[in-house]
Figure (tube, rainbow, N blue to C red):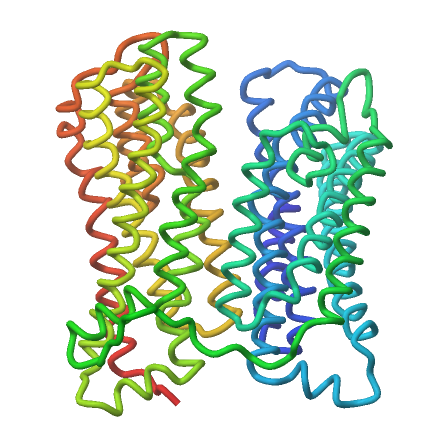
Length: 533
């Protein structure tokens, strides 16, 4: 594990340099992430395969590790970490510059719009290059430390990393529409959700589909040059369209989004609650994005219904109600809750009226909690409706939807509270960066590590019991939900057990509630004493 320790130290040094230039800050962040994720993937694979195949030859171990990295680890790292980071950070940064008037200021100098736009193109491509080289070189060094051949890994990792070129094209196309930091975040999240939805299509030029089509593993690594050409063609077309839109757009900042026929006076908690709920873009984004995420569950329900009939459909229903991708929406939007109002001065305006900080904090929290509840209700309703459409039994489907939909709501509240914690201690882009990282770590990495540790120690009890005990050590809503899921749905081919089995895991249910209260308490204490200037 020496390579991992070296790169953990490197990652810590890079985080300490985030106080520098914003451009260099992004480049350092992507370099650090690219380095550490590859090292972690190599070390986990080597440990896992040597534990399962103790006498495996070194050449076969190298082949297994390479295949696993290229077909599983790297596509997931790129899809769920680098793509949302690239979309959200670049669009929010441009939106922030536009909102502050920096774009108009830059263009008042001898600088054409095309040259300014090409500057953003250059920055996006630099981040792609840094990510690609970081993933390829750090992974190759980790493999060389174990005596593995690295040629196939280098080819595959570089080809897969080219998917980020398509993401840069999407960023450049959306750039003219980002008129504030918040709108940039919403555009980035919306584009990320659409990429996940399009990942189910057959269009290989879509970056998420490209990850499945560009590289194949046989006797070695095979590269599809046609898929690469299609991706580059899409990126160039989107970039040119974005440049033309930016050249023609009006550079005046738009006013606040109006709510027709509705007027609010922020008096006390009630006024703040209603005003923030119905006029906040964040409120609408919660609901819209969760509805879009429900469409991603269609393929899972179809698959298990086809293979296992109604038992498989009901078990798949429980699994999809986990909402594993929803943290990528809830955490960044929660991270904007307080920091955004401080940065744009909204909180100072409201607190200059007869309004206490407690009213503002609770009003904001209630508005976001209402948005989460509506989003969860819509998500659960759409998933249940499709399951019933496929032929699931009504009573059992509604029972599972009610119980596991409630668990989903508690999970998302914890992610929201974690976003509030980030928002209380960090501002601006730093809060966004850490929100996406936490969504990936808490939602994906932590459950995976708990499962791996549980399988290794399954000799001390049943896998579910061991997993349940290990999950209590990790404040990950996804891990706790998985424990409760396994208690009711241990096998796809069998009908789910009674939902009362969930109550046998009281400690895991408590872990969906207690961290939420702790995060919100710390957030309020910090906000109460914060300097709002």
